[in-house]
Image 1 (tube, one colour):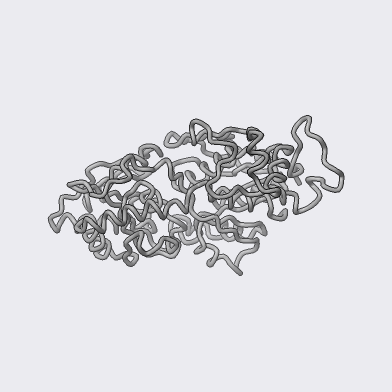
Image 2: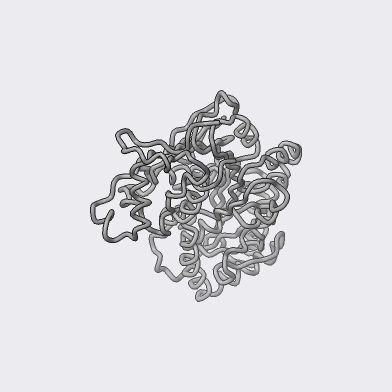
Length: 418
C-alpha cells in the first residue's frame, strides 16, 4: 500500500509510541499550514529556486515571537523528514495546466518536501522544471515510484495511479472537466472511469465543485488559481496611462473552441475597423495558421513562448482580451495580466466569477461585439484604464501561489487515506 506517511530524519529522537506518525488518518494534524504571505525561514536569493529541506530558523524565530501552537508545529516539522510527493503527468508540453502543476511541485519542494514528476513526455523547453523528472513508457505499478502522496492529473493518469497502489494517499488534480472538451469527446468512457475513482479531488475552481458534487465520489477541495505574482510584477507599477498606440494581447490556441480565441480576434478586428491603431500581440502553443492570419493578422506572434517571455509580453501590453467559453476549467491569462498591470476584458464565465466586477470588464460568451465595446471603453477613458490597472494589481494578490500552497499543504497532509 506504500510507505508510512512520515519518516524521521537520521538521528532524530523517536516520539513516544502513542504518538506514532503512522498511527492513523490524523498523522499530519501537526503539520500546520503557514500563515498567508509569511515566508518559511526566509526566502532564497532566487525566489523561484527550490531550497530542498527547510533550514532551521534562528533562535529568535523559534522562540518568543511565535504562539505556542505554532512553535510546537515547527518543532514537529524539524523532527520529521520531508514528505515524498509524486505528480503523475501525461506530458510536460506547453500549457497553462502543466505550468500550474510544475509551480505547485516546485512550491512544495521549496517548503521542504521531497517532490518529483513522472511523465510520458518530458519535452519542456518553454519552462524550467526544478524538480526531478522521470520519463516512463507507460503508467503502471512498475513505473510509478513509491511515495507518501501521489497526485494524478489529466484523466489518463488517474486510473493507473490508483491501481499502482504505491502511495497511502492518492489525489486527482482536476483543472477542468475534460468531458466538455471537443478534442476528448471520443474518450468519454475513459474520462468517466477516471472521475469515478473513489479518491479526493483537487480543483482549481468552485465551478468544478458545483459540477462534480453528488456526481463523483471523493471529497472535493477547491484550491483556487495560483499565480507567481512577483514573476509578472510590472517594472512601472505606478504608471497611469496606456501606451500609444495601444498593444492588445490575445493568448491561447486558435481553433480550440472553448478558448474563444477567434472571438477575441474578432473583437480586435472590430477595434481596428473603427480606426484605432491597435497593435496585436498573440501567444499560442500552436503554430500560426493562414485562417487566423486572414481573420486578424498579428503584429507579433509568439509560438511556444517561455514563461519569462510570456511575463514580458503581458508587461508590454495595454489590454488583454480573453474570450473563453463556460466549459473552460479556469483560464490563467486574466490573472497573469492583472499581475502585470494589464487591464482585462473577458467573457463572463462561471470559473472566473471570483474576480470582482470592478477589477475586469465582461461581455457574454461568444459576444465579440461586446468585447470590442468594453475594450474601446477602456482604451478611450484614461481614468478608467488607470483605475482598472490599479485595481487588478490589488486583487491579484489574493491569488498568490504561496496562499494556494498553504491550502494545498493543508489538504495533502490532513486528508484521510483514500
